[in-house]
Length: 454
Image 1 (cartoon, helix red, strand yellow):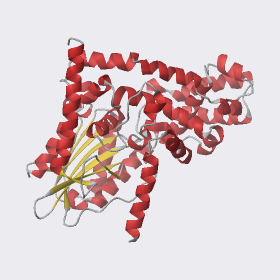
Image 2 (cartoon, rainbow, N blue to C red; image 1 turned 180 degrees about the vertical axis):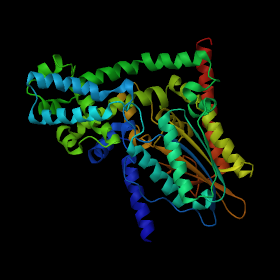
Image 3 (cartoon, one colour; image 1 turned 180 degrees about the horizontal axis):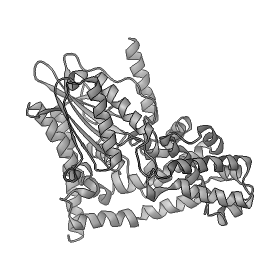
Image 4 (cartoon, rainbow, N blue to C red; image 1 turned 90 degrees about the vertical axis):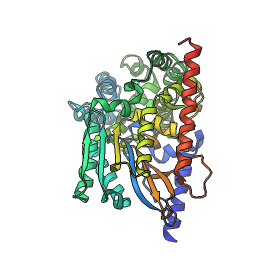
């Protein structure tokens, strides 16, 4: 009874966090400021909770996973810390920083120093995240991990490779007899990074998707938002001369300065820097919310929102990863998979679209040129923090019936499938649901190419 009550309370928390309204999202960010950092949030983005027990008589027999690398340093083309430092450094030289502004300047300088020569590398926290995920997965599914061999594949990015190795070494330490076969080869990238390395995407399809991503009208709305959203409270706390701060120090706008500072402070938590107390003093919940809207707009309106044919066409390119997941799981059902677990380590650019293609509740945002409407149609940070992971586990009873459950970031994930045993779904229904989604997306791509005479 105690476990049941804990599970119910856990589900209520998740339901509240997943609530898809601007007001609910604002409240979530007020409680968990890291949610505004979206893909830059550390793992887990909200505290972990209880998960459902399997229906009576069903035992797990196969484990499948797609995971994002763990926490990392900033990558070279997105150095918000250096951009922020330049603004504050100039403001300090002009003598227009407040006491809080000087505290921010000092903290940003420390973050920049920690960032040096570490571009894109997995941080110590990233290793710990994947060690913890492996320990908890082994605890839940030890009967699987002790029963056979594991196959693991990784993107050629070193942060993905090290995340994979950390997970595997942790499992090996808990079950020394388990054999693990791991690799990171270019030939696997068509499955692990299908949006750019999929050889079946036509040149025309790639060009149309990229042109929309760069020139879609939503981009103009996003840029307007960056220069018009209110961040006056933050500005008043860090500088005594707004005009000079904006025009002479390179801040460009209140919101741009707020975005750079906020994102730098929160992202630094990935390498155990940053100052959460300073952050909550400097930014109002509404300013944090505005950062979320700006940061999330690109992902919804260019990668995995529904309701725009170019974005849906891009999602159709996820097919190689979908086929690998379903194919190897079906082989396990048919007792033809030589491995009891298949692991894949990739990037946030693929985890988010994968969840949307499969259609998990709370993971399918609705495209809109109104970027606030688009970005508040789901809660991005809940699905794509550092070390985001989707675990798909198969169960079977003595009658040979097979159910499948999904754990998204170690929480039960639900699908729009009518089922008395949810979040455990009949395997055939699960496959049909995903295949129907893929067929729809393929149809969108066909229509788009035909419309453009391709």
